[in-house]
Length: 280
Image 1: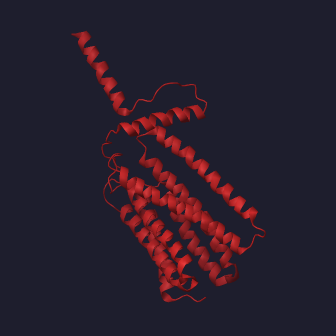
Image 2: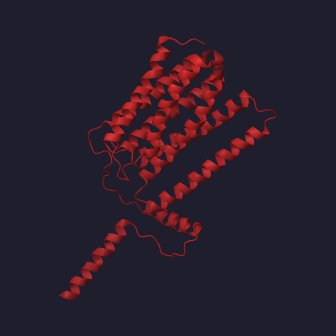
Image 3: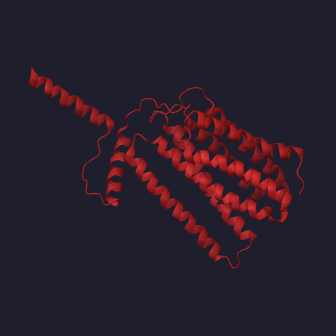
């Protein structure tokens, strides 16, 4: 299959923008807060260089190289989801620790299901590999869409401005994930004749996501600043329950109930008031 000039433009434009993203992340100190996202973009740049080499030197290996790199990309995208989610719920350490436990189990289950699917096939051929990677990708895309919805619905409560870099990562992944899921369904319904057009749409959608990340990476404001967290009793009760569950799972002997920062502040004020009364 020969590539057009448009294909080459789209092929090289996106990684060029991702190089700029890495540069701005390094300058603004974002790499230390979002290392998995930094690694994801660096990997995508390396993949493009590798695929160009394979396409022109070993074209008969392009199919296997594409799907192998796609599988690694899916795994890195899953790590980015966990990274952003952990940052978003940072004010609630119990929920953050519980989310980490859930994500570890989710990775284990994904690997297990993938292995069982491959083992159940009578022969491991190219179709089995493609279906396995596609199923994994669709699962991760659903989680990315869920992350976008979570950030949009809870950003005010958790003190996140929409100018925060974590929101930008969520918006970019949400746009690309939602587009990809729609395209999957279209491919199944309209047939292979439209594969090239749908593939072009997918590439453009990913390019727009990269542009969103680039715009957030070069924003002049302090992107890590968190506004005042709005106290929500429901979130706090979930946080307390999550802390108890995590402590129980880890075998901790601590039996204390978690006090939120607000409750700790109230206790501190009350203690200071008692000292003033005694002094007077």
